[in-house]
Length: 175
Image 1 (cartoon, rainbow, N blue to C red):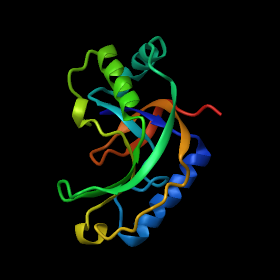
Image 2: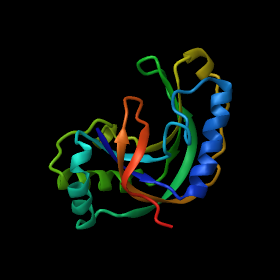
Image 3: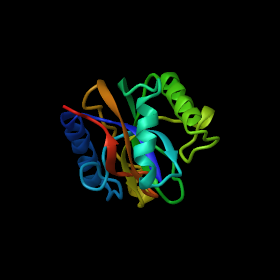
């Protein structure tokens, strides 16, 4: 499975990794930025293979999909348990704009459903951790966003069952 997402400049990734590392100190996390996941905001989890990436990237570049966007972190959220997992994340402002981007990408690839929710079920966010010890995870301390505004760069990467972006295949920060 592939993830079309926005990833970040190295300095922003480093600040987010510090938050993720701190949360892991309170409760072991299966999802640690900088260790086994790249910080990202998922737009579309799509059922495709790495062999499809070049063609997909070309389509994205030739479309009106924004290659980079301004993002704004909002609140720290600890999600209710889901399949024995508790996720923490930063919610985002400008959800309507990200929803439009998702719809454009879905049209571009003629996709009628995605694996990360769409329409009213779409919840763009920046995941910071995933905990299997539900009791410890529910006691995670609130985190202040390490910054408010930042730039996201369109990326295609691989995705695992926890929603982690394991590696960037194309796109992302160019310096």
